[in-house]
Amino acid sequence: MHNKEIEENTSFTNTSKRQKYHRKMKVIKIGGGCLKGIKTIRHISRLIPSYGKGHILVVSALYGVTDILINGIDKALKDEELILPHLEIILKLHLSVATHLMESAECVQGYKRELADTVKLLERYYYGLNFTGELTPKMADAISCLGERFSAQLLAWTLRSYGLNCGYMFPQEMPLYTDGKFGDATVDLEATGKALQDSLLPYLAAHDMVFVPGFYGVSQKGEITTFGRGGSDYSAAAIAAAADAEVLEIWKDVDGFMTADPKFVPQAEFIHCLSYEECAELSYFGATILHPRTVEPVRQRGIEIVIKNTMRPEARGTVITDSSGQSAKIIKSITYTEDIAILKVHASGVGYRPGILSIVSGAITDAALNIKSVVATQTCISFLLSKKDLDPAFAALERIQPRPYRLLEREDELVLLAIVGEGLSSSMGVAARCFSAISGEDINVEMISFGPSKAALYFLLHRDKLYQGVHALHQTFFAAAQQA
Ligand code: ASP
Ligand code: MG
Image (cartoon, rainbow, N blue to C red; front, side, top):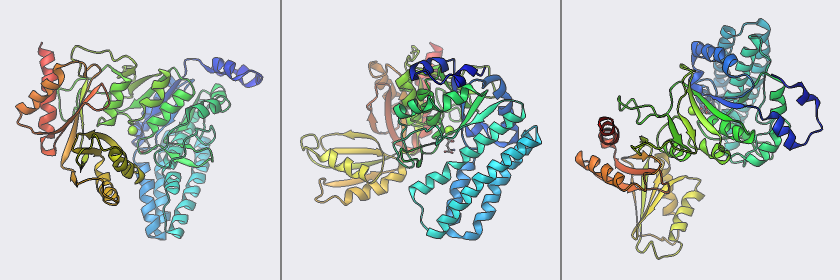
């Protein structure tokens, strides 16, 4: 499996290197939900020798650890005395997994040393925070990324204790380059792709497998930048694209995408195949299976994403490719998010007054707030925002002088339902069927948008109507199709 020649032959060019390394290599992402408690982590560790050989394994932090690291920031800012007990919790949690799982005392010792080094680093960060009393975005990233380091080393040492020749590599060693934006970075695929040819890929060739901490990369200056919460999926996708992998496998504790949230709709069905577009829309608005930006890097290179349920590793979960496997139903899934609010900007002549849209949207983005979507009519611009961004966005628009609008209005008692399916926008009857399903339940639609995507249709409803709305739509598109 390891290719000795690759290590020895250093004279070939990048292109021939790429061909050498380009076996059927996968990038496998192991989520925090699969790293929850000793039993589950043991289960994953036993799967890896059969499914992980020759591949890159990008890991999340153990379940809950990122939250613990972030909670520690508050404690450190509040009271110095809280720091050491907090570090003790983190240390104990990882050590207890290590001692239960590792089959050799040397490996436990090896892990212990590395764990202690990283905890020491964390200790310095926490004391630094306590001393300065100030949290910068840079420090928040440097601290919150450490859970992935603990878990990547934990798995590497566990698999070593089973006799495998496995390694780990940190994003700063590859380097996995980003645009340098703290808390919400984007990968520089071009620079990373070049760098991996001389770092991760030859290292993989010399090992059975390589573990990589997900969730962060580094700027050109070497600063740690995370990809936002849940960002390990995106890390794995970026590495798959930069390393030119055959496939990106996402290991989870569920089968994959469903026609609706099964907690809500018990008769929801499993979806075998989605297009990139459908997957992006579903992840963006609601479905929590993948980080919304996972599709971006792999779509550019046409790399397939496969969701795998680690409880049923033989089964093929949802496959995401560039063809949707469009079904007669057209609609693939109904999803929703409660994290939605509208900021309405009333002004006359929105359509013919040049610049008004850019002035108000500029004020929102300058305040570092994300606009999820915009719907404009002649008299009103509606910004769809995350609930937490509503008040700061309102304040940002109030500060604009002179005021380019007549009135601002906010609404946050809403939910957004998204109906997703490739071909939906060209199928005339779909919107009408949605409307009659919803109005049949006496639900008032606050807003509807075809959005910028051809594969999604959004409705905003009062939050009390969420359950009824999802049911009515699911019944219309799925139960009816089943009977037909
Ligand atoms: N550990 C990080 C989080 O909890 C990233 C991830 O798991 O994807 O957000
Ligand atoms: Mg996740």
